[in-house]
Length: 389
Image 1 (cartoon, helix red, strand yellow):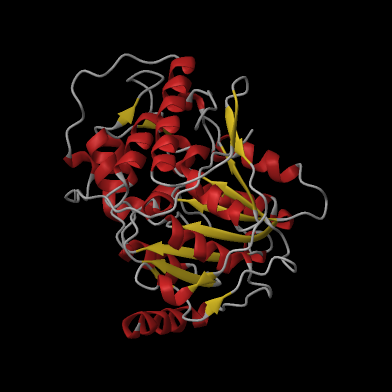
Image 2 (cartoon, one colour):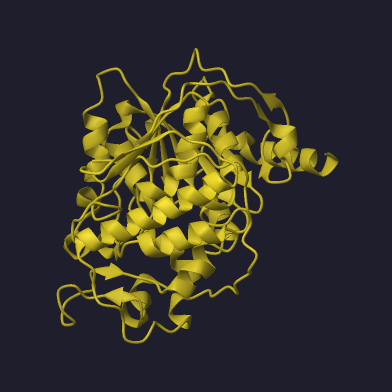
């Protein structure tokens, strides 16, 4: 169902090249011609080779890891002995705008140590490999899942018709948890829609929900609506976009979305290391269109019963800081954290900053410990602390 990928990075890197922002996806020309379609086996082999190269580069840079590759099942896992790591806010303030106090990791009294990581559109479990490594090193139990048609799940994305179908691996995983076990659920980008869907259908299995520069939609809102200010209205986008895929024929509604390499770099990875960009460009899958065009039905009794936290990235070109601010203003979470210098994929561009924030959230004990009304005040205090450091 889910696939956990991990290695042990020691440093954060920033991409050297800056790519000019394109506010509308239709502004860049699609590639001419097009490569021949790979078989599922060829796609998986190419992905494995790219991931192995990324791991090898991290090891050459001084990282260490113990890994096991299951050649038959198409998954990679690692095991590290639980350790204790301290998270200190002052030393990280230039990159992560967070509480100014030092925080010691205390695992004994946590409601749960299990952190379920949900990828965004086009990605797969593979994108969390740095986050998995860091969380395991801290003594937590991270799990990364492939949603339907993502990662090494070979479901044809053209046939995914609903958010329910797309989110099925996540719902299946949560449903099979022991009766009293809960998880911290983390969703990136459009993976936020799957997190919201899970909150509505399995609220008793979720301790906290974390939206990482994600589509934290309101009731009756579509995930695509979050991007409409950046891209265009849904109606215009479906008529004019050059990146739509028509898996059922040109005379039928579009079924998916695929960006070209330059568009991906400019929107998602403007601060990410080149080796992670290379991994992503050979591993990303077409985006099923139906799930992000579907309106969600969310209730206060289910969706609203779980504490939500939002992590903003301040150098994001896919979901701009202004749009992120609008999301938290319209649907206030229980806490807000910010990552300075992070692009739309902080698990690549700012893995240590993301890690420290996740540790902070995991350790929040009392429900509603960070009240929506205090979120803005906390952010102002955090920014003041950064300036004084």
